[in-house]
Image 1 (tube, rainbow, N blue to C red):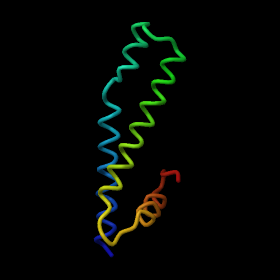
Image 2: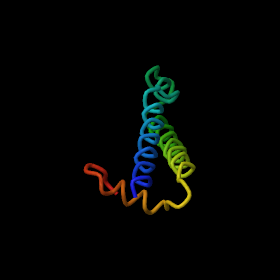
Image 3: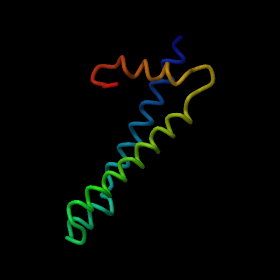
Image 4: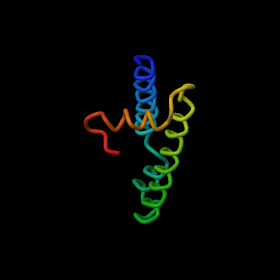
Length: 87
């Protein structure tokens, strides 16, 4: 039983690293908005599109890391049991 728990933790840590690396970079949309080349509505749409893309990439990376014998539901259940995680 320890091995699936360890794998789940490793997947969550990997997902966190992916998300953190994406957040550390200033996006093109942010730079254009700061320079006044796009208005607020265009910036919000571009920002929302970028966040959707990052979410898809993160979920895809998490799903690739699901080992044989461990279900996605089990990972979700373990993540939901962690304090501070909203499911």
